[in-house]
Image (cartoon, rainbow, N blue to C red; front, top):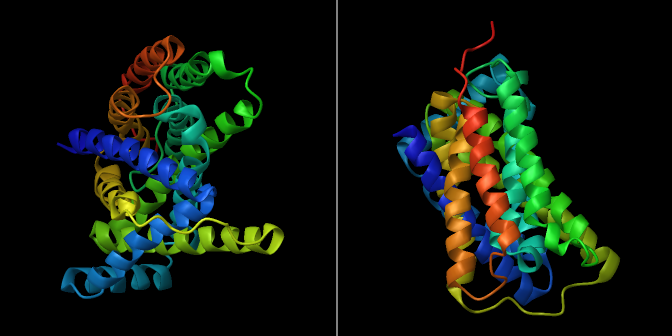
Length: 304
């Protein structure tokens, strides 16, 4: 059940990438698009979580854990990784396509999940780093090179690939930290709200800095409400991570969500307007599936 939920969250991430990419293309500013969709999700969370009794209890539990030292202040900064992720969607998806973007996210997630489990960032503590896991993570990186090999001659492509790689590491770190907050709150919803608040503040700071440097974006926000559904999808994804990471660990959650991301991304690229999956992307996807299977295969023993 937990792994199935992680796969469904991965499909949601692929859909979120397409929506943020479209909104970023319409606005001509990927970070501003990410801020708009994050704001939509945050408004909904602020209207619900403090009102529901379980949400209020969870927020109080987080405060108690912070004061007691059971939860450190930096455990609440998972939203920074989420901000990087949604910003990379708005900036990179339009040029790379959802599938190539997702393969790059997968590689970053595999590396980030490996490091998060090794350092014990998640609620399940430290996990052994086996040669198979390291090999699987490195194979994911190689898969990125294969997937975008036919586009490396295009100016700016290398930078567009590096961004989702870093965002993937941020997503794995976000899942680990949100899992800790969710465990302290005994509910995923306070962790989701905290993550959205941090992401909102991070993106707002970047947008304001951009306005100070370059001026405000020239285009107005599109009127179609479905373009802002990425924030609502993000609520489900973060809540799922906060609930599931404590059961299966950061790396296994990241790898299970990878399957959903890849399947969803290939379907979106094949069925909707935009860059079609190339042969290189299909090969990179196949390599990625093999890599995540290899990384997930060893027994998940906790390191004392």
